[in-house]
Amino acid sequence: MSSVDSVIILGAGASFSDGAPLQNDLIKEFCSTALIRKLGFSSKGIPIEKLSEIEINQLSQIEKYFDLFWGADLLSSFDKKFSYPTFEDCLGILDIAQNRNESFGLEYRSKLNEFRNSLIFLIAKTIEEKLTASESHNHETLINRLVKQGTLRSTAFISLNYDIIIDNTLTGIRNSDGFDLDYGIEFMNFKRDPNSDENSWGRPNPTKSILLFKLHGSLNWLYCPTCNQIEITPKIKGAIKAFTQSEKCYACGTPMEPIIVPPTYFKEMENVYLQQIFQRTDEILRNSKKIYICGYSLPDADLHIKYLLKRAELLNRNPLEIFIINNHKGKKNPKKIDKKKRFLQFFKRKTMVKYTELSFEDFCRDGIQD
Image (tube, rainbow, N blue to C red):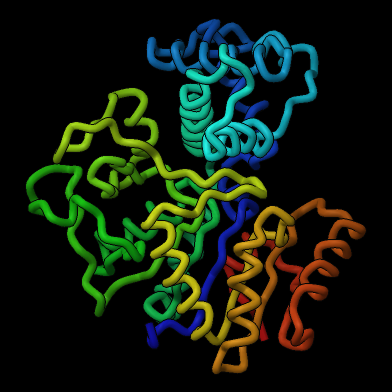
């Protein structure tokens, strides 16, 4: 812990720079892709891979959900410039109902978990397809810069995103430069022989580990509610495997579940692994000297992140510097001013907050120039 001086926090804007869709666009992006693949050819008449049977089943559930809850014919609505509900609304109301053990009528009660699972599948597939088509590699540029500067080992990462862009980038470093990736939790496949199969993952060596804490879950984690254990699916999105291959716990045979915390005011953080990550994140932030906040604007729904940042500011033993990297090409001045004001209002020590004009791409390439 004491070897970490800098913490890089990665928000949605960081992933967006490498091609991932923003949360508000997830539904629309999914519909656009699904409609094309359902037809089996692009808008230019070029044949493309059709949806698989499993994808069709998941799409059917999502279409049913939008019909019952939002009165929308999902794929037909795409052509009519339908005003889509946010992903936050779609997933959030299902989570609240399940946690309160309530429903929206008898006909909905048995369907809530199916709808939720289909929406998570939607996240995974949409992110996967957008990133596959992207030619941006800002996370790779960032890691290469830190390696060249000799500061990667003293840097920890906090990702607020489900995607595994930073995970796979660090895994590449793990394989080529001898670093280990440490998520701050114990995976059940640590207990297996690392050379036995592709799903095994060697326990990270503390003396050469790079810390990556994912407070909202990750698309490459699978959870067994019976064993209360978590498995990592290295470099692939286990959340997709959970639905497309009915991934089961190798210890007890229970169907595995993804760990995804929705982008809502109501955040379910009771999972023991998320609690462990939260605690380690708190410790890292309170002992850091520099925090770089990238592509993130302190949204109202993320009160738990604000809590961690406030503790870092008030309890830190070091003279903490906080750098905000939240600009992008085409961002208008009124929006810049509003975002800057939000950060300055939040932090007590205004002079220690450096609101830069840098984009995430700039930061990845050049860092902070004195």
